[in-house]
Length: 436
Image (spheres, rainbow, N blue to C red):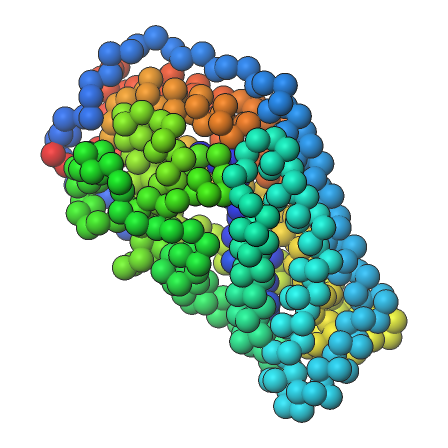
């Protein structure tokens, strides 16, 4: 990701297990060769100053942190409420009566729980995703588009959950002392399938994807990509202006579905050379294999989260199971408890995942600068992104630790100002990837 300061959802233990339970959310370099020509010799050697945040951006940042915290607390309270009120136990008994077979009961329970959680979180989701975005001038969405997208995402999640929720529960039944290990191992191929198929089966349900409209710019992008060995048509333009005024670009997919996606809002607001720097960043993600590496890291964090869930879950059931209406961790009624513990583990592990994500983003920035040597254009692109997305150049420590999947805009501009080893006669870190 280039323009956003935070991924929609970092792939953490909560995301992996929730995908598994309920379907929520969704090699070394080649030998060095001589560098070919850059997209334009850099003639701007003067440092680009970091602009201060506007009062509106500061307010958006501060209230965003409070809303994020409120959302986490609200999700915890909902799951606790489903347990202590006995609603989860009642839902289990209801689904067992109408499902008859265990697998069918699990599917019904997972589907209904997904819908129930969606409805309970809808007011806050509506305020954060629709009201607030319009209030700050960031959204172009009509209510019909916002609500339609929200319902589609929920139904996809609920259906996936209904199909796969039985797997971890069966593992708990069959291997109560090692289920966390087998669930983690099975989550790997499952998550690879999700990342593989999402660009072609899910993303087009929400926005229109197609080839770039600016053919001349597309030719320059393809030439840039060809210099690092990307020769297929892997660049897509997505019509995001129907949803937002914000700008962004990202890499998604695996194997044959791997692609670089540019929002049309970004193409409208950045100059061609600034867009090429953005592409250099996304190409860096692409060739350095950041997507599969992120999946592998998430699996390690998932393992830690599931061990935490297993140990604390059994302890809580032993003490309070009767009150919850839960006899053992494999009960359907225990799903809210499992999700609750996974969410807590996810919060505890988030700083690790965010730290690694910031490292990857910095390396993608480094790759872009080495590929294009357009430091000034890169810095000015970040300034436009800061102003358009209402970002603050140096966010709070709280934001950096718990929400910061990207280096701050200020840090990235500073990096553009100081990183130019070719000017100092020093070797490039990624010269081995770059061909004529």
